[in-house]
Length: 468
Ligand SMILES: Cc1cc2nc3c(=O)[nH]c(=O)nc-3n(C[C@H](O)[C@H](O)[C@H](O)COP(=O)(O)OP(=O)(O)OC[C@H]3O[C@@H](n4cnc5c(N)ncnc54)[C@H](O)[C@@H]3O)c2cc1C
Image 1 (cartoon, helix red, strand yellow):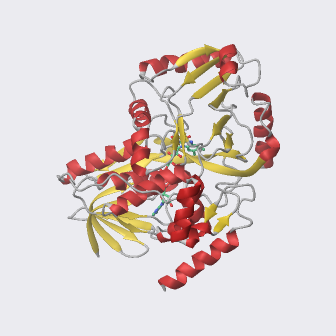
Image 2: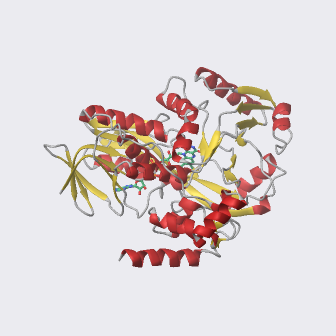
Image 3: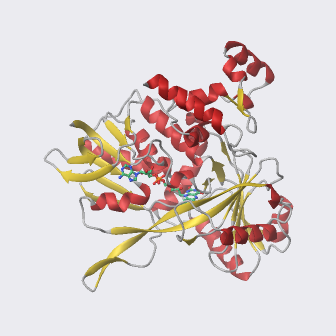
């Protein structure tokens, strides 16, 4: 049986940041992930926004973490070499209901100390963002809102955690937890692990994981969202656009991503299909609202659609002698601490990506305190990204190709990605085409991988043979 100080359950963006922040302390850590790679759950499908912090209840932990998380995002992304763009956002309304919401959010933002927040007229909004339809009645401008690639961020934290000594077990599912004299015994599909602390970051299963040892307090009820991705050669808005509909919950969001694509996101819909699936009805609705709000965007340039799953946490209440979810989604972050050394992040929705490092620090610091751990003075916060030939000037690219011809062998023609980059992604842990895509961006262009997938499969297969 393996014995460690701490087990982190779940390798989504939160588990990866918890693991990375634990490495700031002299603590032995194993990260357990049931899939064959990290960031393949909720983290792989979201709106990619780094929020400014005006949406959150003043005085709440969520508000504090969002505003601070946003403020330090440049440094975080510089350390981890992850692209981050502060595009600024415009929340736009087309009527009196939306204007009221805008005013409320502005007031929250001021109380939350969101920098540079301005409530502006529809005319000014349309001047700032010529892609907007006329008829905007008011807008909330937040210059600090940004966008980041969610899986690149999570994978960067994961690589940095490993670099600093974190042990990772992929394809390892947690199936039981018992209390022991030492702390806890975690039963996995591979073997038992004995530990003093458990940090439960199991995303859609976080409630079930806690219930392996404790009575139910929170239950996750899922709903979905749907997305369209436009080709990056399409003209897009410069800002992130939040459309506040006159009908609550019917707005859409448009995000010009760090890759240059436009991401269109619907509000929530019932979880009626498979996880991450889409339906033609809601896709049509999304298209039709987008055409009204952003009439100059060419919606014929859609290259991909995908669905997302949102875990909504509900407190459990007793009704007729039975414990049942109370029917109202909890607005704050749910951080449960049912016993010493056991923490659960349950149903961390938006802005979980913005707050991933903040939440990671929060849990790591509490765990270190519980374990009486000393700071790890050797912690290195910096991680190097995979070198991308498409970002190089001609001279640098040429000299690299002279040294390693694999940099000149372009496998993904749409996104200009070389064989050398793909091999490096595999060396760093990609075991599937999706894993390679998440690390270097193959298959994200017009052909969506139809031309390069076969070659990537062969490279993955070759690497597998080398490992055998
Ligand atoms: C539609 C949508 C849009 C969003 N947009 C934004 C946004 O724009 N900005 C923002 O800040 N936030 C956003 N969020 C929130 C953000 O995406 C989430 O907070 C974050 O991705 C949650 O990450 P996670 O690590 O908790 O979950 P996950 O990524 O799901 O990771 C959990 C991991 O645990 C593993 N696991 C589960 N059970 C077990 C087990 N028994 N054993 C081992 N491993 C297990 C899973 O395989 C998974 O890999 C959005 C969320 C949604 C749903």
